[in-house]
Amino acid sequence: MTPILELVGVTAGYGRIEVLHGVDLTLPRGAVMALLGPNGAGKTTLLKVASGQVRATAGHVHVGGAHVNGAAPDALARAGLCTIPEGRSVFPNLTVRENLRLASYAGVSAAHVYATAFDRFPRLAERAGQLAGSLSGGEQQMLAMARALATNPAVLLIDELSMGLAPLVVRELYEVVAGLAADGVSVLVVEQFADAALAVADRAAVLVHGRVVAAGGPDDIADELANLYLGSAV
Image 1: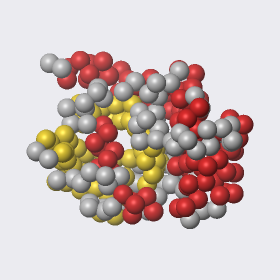
Image 2 (image 1 turned 90 degrees about the vertical axis):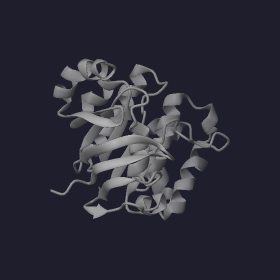
Image 3 (image 1 turned 45 degrees about the horizontal axis):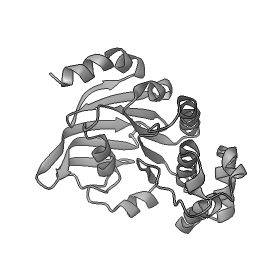
Image 4 (image 1 turned 30 degrees about the vertical axis):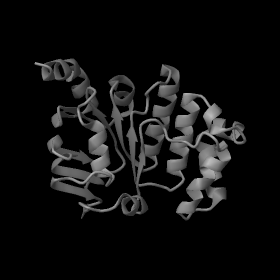
């Protein structure tokens, strides 16, 4: 079956600074892939290339088998590719309900947005009238995910899901990720801390210095992770 997202020989960077060096990555349909690696490995840049925010200088990006090099981020979003950036990016001075309502501007009804969000995250229903800036970090991440899911994405790109969150909250969020995959959403999640992501991942890849140094099943990657990280520093 054609993968939902594929990067082939992708090179990219910022000006004269090359960050990705011939990256190959394949996200199967309905799968969770954990993209792991140390700080500065190029993980966020890879997500930006996949979502159209940074243009590949070489190689190919395919979504659903279609060549999308040069496609604008909004065009990819309309095609079903949705990104949750690092830092969650909620609007702190708007309520939970108002944050969610913004997703209705993508063409879905506000009623559908609320129903989807509150069914997946009952805690948001309890906080519906609360300012987003007063939520806990975990609740803000739930809100960011709920807003993304309101558009019924085929592919969800998540950057550093666990950053700054308590382990119990991280496990809860990754249970949601596993549920999304079970419902047919393909998820590529960037993580610096591997354990929680590998617990729900179908596949994993390790990015070091802008190159994929390993890819495979989560158990295989977990066994080699320390060597891959430490070996990259040599």
